[in-house]
Length: 167
Image (cartoon, rainbow, N blue to C red; front, side, top):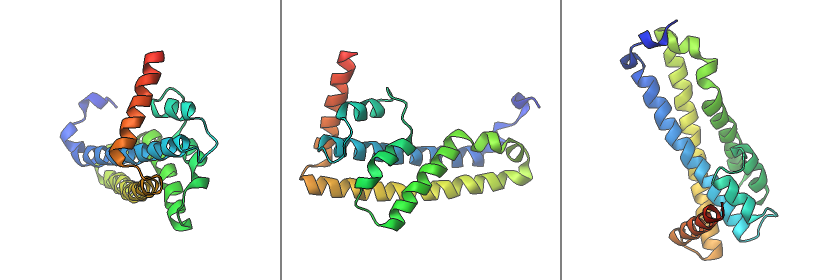
């Protein structure tokens, strides 16, 4: 099949669902990175701040799943929320790395495309829930360490700028 012959308008619902899910996915990932940074900076976990900053800056090829593995034992969340975060990591990885490839035949077929769109929207819903959980964790960390969000992100940006100057 020549994919250049496909009408982009025919895929508008799919691309809107995928685009909005990508935005939520990145928000969730950034929240997890901020949690990693905060836990490292405050020496709550045995993980170097330098390694954390490399992950945040994509200099070290750690996956979201590995970041979650590093921080999950120090998160003050109930089992249900921990399960949501774990599921969100898995479904996010499937969405980012596999969903289009594994469903290309269904995507091309107008009658089965809705099933893929529905699956993407279900993933988005899970990621939104996980993103809210990470936002709550971040707020708890800010309260615990008596720092504000702006100060935390300013510190993170300064650390990143220092790393970038060294390279």
